[in-house]
Amino acid sequence: MLKTQFICQSCGDAHTKWSGRCDGCGEWNTLVEEAAGGPPGGLKGRPGQATRTRPASFTALNGTTAAPERIQIGVDELDRVFGGGIVPASATLIGGDPGIGKSTLLLQVAARLAHNGLKSAYVSGEEATAQIQDRARRLKVADRPVQLATETDLRKVLAALKATTPDFVVIDSIQTMWSDSLDAAPGSVSQVRACGQELVRWAKTSGAALVLVGHVTKDGQIAGPRVVEHMVDTVFYFEGERGHQFRILRAVKNRFGPTDEIGIFEMHQYGLAPAREPSALFLSSDQDDTGGTAVFAAMEGSRPVLAEVQALVAPTAYGTPRRSIVGWESSRLAMILAVLESRCGLGLGGRDVYLSVAGGYRMAEPAGDLAAAAALLTAAAANKGPEKAIYFGEVTLSGAIRPVARMEQRLKEAARLGFEQAFVPEGSPTDIEGLTITPLKRLSDLVDLLAPDIAP
Image (tube, rainbow, N blue to C red):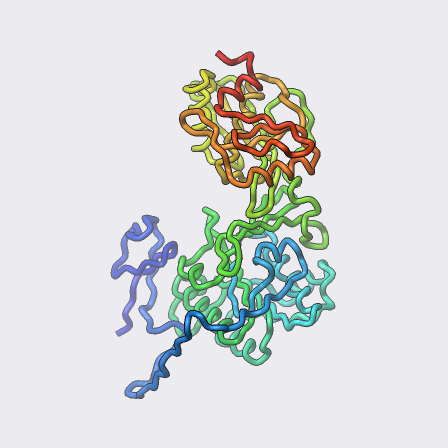
């Protein structure tokens, strides 16, 4: 009798019976009935057949095994995110919203590596051959010797890869692959787990660099079980807004390099190209005198990035003040407003507050607190504030401004881009050429500088 179990399509937990809510992740209506199969990939022995198991071999920790030489892509933004190039026999998972440019970027990478003499293969389970060829002609890479296949059967894909032995392989996408050893639909947790495990195992034994494309959920997370992210060596997220021309490739897991680096690309008619001035890409050219803007000196890995924070403070039209935030955490804005009201005596809690980070950039580090506060203060006071100024620093609940990491790098990048003033925490370097640095100890000091008219 065929045994079945109920698998959560969100977290991968198995249940013996159906229920409306998954006990593992708490999601509703995510349990799907699937067959309880044996080992993934159809690795089943014959009944009564004895199997010989070769013991695993151990190596000394102080051994001299040479590290594999990285594959240089030749694109600075990509090599930076990978940690200096792609490592052979590695597996990479790239996720992103539909239409963000994942397939375009990976087709360009495969074509570039093929042009450099490596054997590249591109396997698509979502598009027809003619569609991919048409995209290649649009990207001006149709003449590159990339091996192209459109197949979803895992057994056929692995057979073709073993026959051609490529150096770089793209699977677009892992959710479309299916194995005939499992009685489950493509894209289900069981299929994604089994196909991902087989493909990663092939990459480790063959020495090829494997890239898997993953769909994302409405929450922005890669769909399927989290175990797939644990299988692979690197996990990247391809981010960006369709209304903007740039895209960000962000590393969230990397066994061979840093996990906080980003690569910034610009979308044009011939595909994706590295941004010409990444650190100034998120600055706005608006020179309005009504205030409400502040430039934040952020750090993305080892790279300083300047982004503009925009704020608007308006009278409340209804009983409950509105809060609209783009590119920042709503809880962080609520904290800054509470500190301004409790520690600085400013009554902004009863007014509508809108805050946005220009260019679709997302502030993720606490160092953006001071820039957000500066934008709110100049918006409330309706004055422009200091020209060519940058801000960074963490605001505490007591109203103090704490130092942040890599302050010297932030200041040097601001000076290189022509900024003349910097409002920073105490303890920052003060000898940066071309910058007038104003150290701040408390948030009330910034209020006295930017909005003295509304101070109590």
